[in-house]
Length: 269
Ligand code: PEP
Ligand code: MN
Image (tube, rainbow, N blue to C red):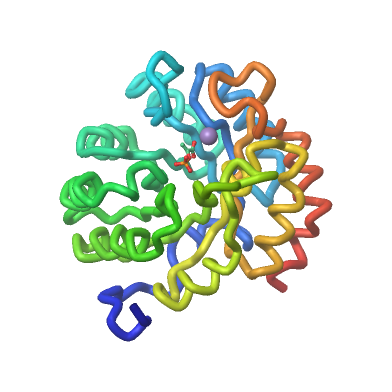
């Protein structure tokens, strides 16, 4: 499909990117684990003016049962407290209608659709329907498999439901050989999805691409080199004891160092 037959009619710049300095930095834990963990992480992140949005997973799509699946609605209270105390915008993953309803009820600023949801048009349509008449930015992660049409289709479903404030998040793909990464970056897809969805900001999630904190810098550098509009980086006050994705999360202090090494302030000048 070329850009000509895309149904997307999107605003060139979204609130997501107008919310703070460019490239937009979204940081926060993979999972919301306690009010203390959320507040400690957020207070440290707030000290870095390059971070404008706080992320946290509240409903966690785990590959196998029996793993930590998130605290759900209770964690939305903690997210609300983070917003009230720090003034950071908040973002959460939604995977169904009830997630959308709960997130809206608790005043979450930005929603995102996760990789395991983007693969399922029924789920994406359910989310889109629940968002009819709602003015909120929505970010869409790529599907787990490298299918750009599926990614584009999710954007279109949300757009047709009236959501114009959209962004894409590249989090890598599951391929037969992802090494050394957790998910293959397939960097050529950056250009391809840009031409399929012109004007839609494209962020990168180096955490889920890398899967390991020692590879984060390389992934970030490649993403920024390709002109990505923002980074979503999982950040935890004590990554080693994280209940999910412990090996890829960084402390707020190390995020600060990483952003400095990346020379973020000069990237979009
Ligand atoms: C996440 O952001 O914590 C997450 C579950 O990511 P993904 O949907 O990319 O796997
Ligand atoms: Mn994660």
